Image 1 (cartoon, rainbow, N blue to C red):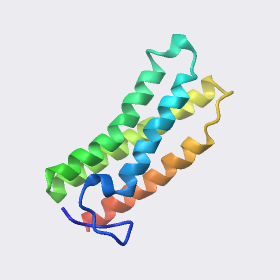
Image 2 (image 1 turned 90 degrees about the vertical axis):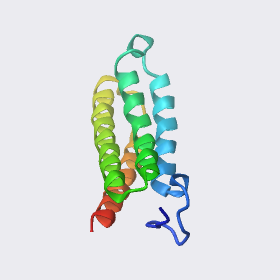
Image 3 (image 1 turned 180 degrees about the vertical axis):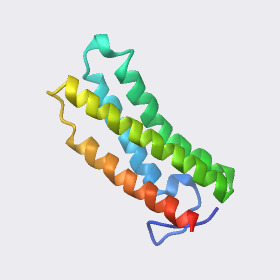
Image 4 (image 1 turned 30 degrees about the vertical axis):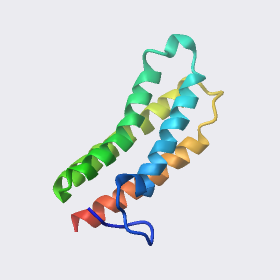
Length: 125
């Protein structure tokens, strides 16, 4: 698959996709955020947020690796679902842990949502 949607260069690997790169950045941000949650929280919301965020770049990569547009779209949609799941969990975290700074993560989530939706639209047409 050698398609480009966001840059002037040809995409040779899923690692060249800006949306994948930003989702990796999001993984790090979520890990840093959840490290600051109370220790009694480490087996519930923290784990769910980490699983959801890891799912995003993983599904982008897996779909890309399938080499078929239909499969790729399926996995991009799964990544999108995980992103919305994470967004909901972030809303819950904000409600429970008001002292944290969530703005950068919220902005990154919105940016990735737009990129995934754009990629899905382009591949669907």
